[in-house]
Image 1 (cartoon, rainbow, N blue to C red):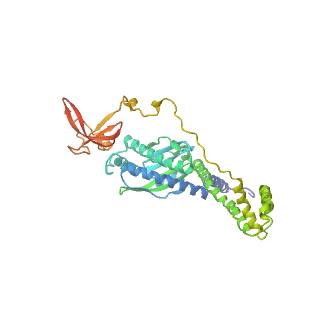
Image 2 (image 1 turned 90 degrees about the vertical axis):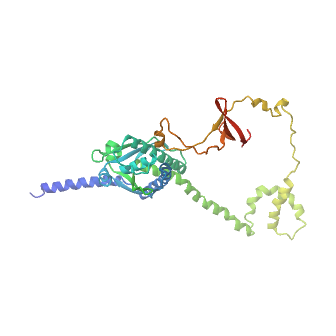
Image 3 (image 1 turned 120 degrees about the vertical axis):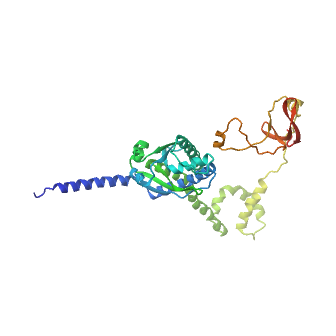
Length: 395
């Protein structure tokens, strides 16, 4: 039995080999600290703009906090996420090559869609319908579109996304690869805390494949390289300052470098300088270029060609008659109002719409969409008319 392994020892060795393989695979699927910082910074900028867009859609204060970058697998989502939840897939079609997934809680989606339809966010009863998914897809389209605009300005390149698609996912009945290929292994998870007024205080997750996260880092580094280049130019500025103190000390060494450009002026200036033997040679070197400029400058009065008449005299005068037959569209605006999508869907024959104008108040007259006059409504036989009472802008 010497030199032979028991079955328990063999199983232990095989188990140890499997553990090392998993650890090696996990070690490959990681990001460096610089990559994690860059991804967090880009997510922070994009989600800050997205929060502003969502705030305008739901008419509520929206706050999305600083992201936290970590790693996860599908089993981690089963433990940490609500069941079911909404997966919103975002694909980039210009500027970036890849996709990511936003994960939101079902109740948060109901609150956001209710606010978008003019509600107060309390209508969260019932199941999540196609209307909810369509509304949250449009909200994410505008949010991620604005975040893409922020990334475009930051990376100085055009970045655009395809319309996002939202789906209700029960994590117990689905596997990661059925939603996206990168979810079957280890992926990057960026977590945010999302607050919408006093209605929502929950977690918003953004899932990235490692390849796409590294590509974002490369794009970020290409952008920051321009900032490093400006710092590298600093020694060049210091070199330009070095000759300044040297010029204040009279030394014969700089003179041969300036002789090729000043040989001819020095020959011409020898005669007048003979009468001033007490002048310092360094002062003569400073005066020579100034005197050379005065001798070489030629000053002459400016001469311009006179204006001559071109073409027919009809072109020199304005002829408004050429425009008198141009048709313009005149619009009379009785008033305006704004309604939510829910109120517009409730319109029916007999619905009364209240405008933002009092009875008897002058109405607006627009020409080609431009506000030009005020007037009052009159009846001419069996048709309505407008009597102009005040001119705002002359056409």
